[in-house]
Length: 373
Image (cartoon, rainbow, N blue to C red):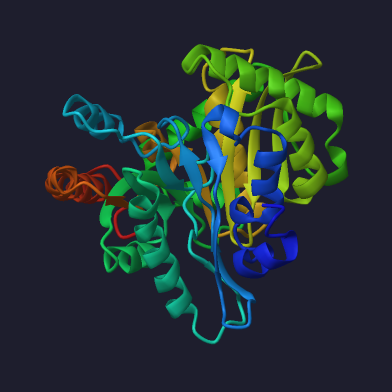
């Protein structure tokens, strides 16, 4: 990142999505969270105009594994390697360890031909596997428009599902509840009341209100979650220190306190229109504490700040009954080996039909909102 520089990168990345900012991605590198030693060798690409001015950039990494991606290709790697191929290393255009949808083909805001630059970046990405002798390149959680641009350059499009909350101009949390059917409305009120009556209080910390002790505590929560679920922490403590130094005004750390002790926390990032749920952790296993800290507090924040969307991370059908709705996510995959490419293309066609059908079924049959809303 530092070879490109903050000014040139952010002129392309803009300010809408903090995850593609120089500050966030450089913190990943400088903290050695995304580093060759962790299997995330930075290998970003740039596209320049004839005069040498950087017109576009794309975050890119050489990956020695498939950890920390959230668009799973383990089965592809296993099949290819059992057939005698070498799947790793591969190229990955992504925000490390973050299943956050956003732009990947980043173009300078004042460029007169932005689509030409996006096409050039897509073509450049597609050319790299052959040039470098790698199995392929994978662009994950990109926009639908970018997925189509890359499909025109030979990428295979893939879809997934996340669950996002949409702000329909609500003035308060009660306004939001009023849009739900009665059963879901009563359930959410019961869940929130259960946590408050158990003696928990919540705070949303941002900017200079965040202190080193808060980050130390949250890192303990983060390590507890990773130790239980994955066995290895992707992010270092230095990452959170750099995040505070570089982006603390875009950070909201929701803390849950009980008997004077912070027992849980949810890290959120704020963009121009969206609140992004990032990480969660707790040393307290009280029922409903997770829902309150991660989902309901996020909705409160979005309404208060007049944000349009809450993106609460990957997976989680349990989010539906709490007002979060299915949204298709997009990725694009370029495989150099023709046989592997043909097999994956067939799989993705079948997978897409199933995912789109599931999304439609959820919206029609399991929506928590009143009919007509």
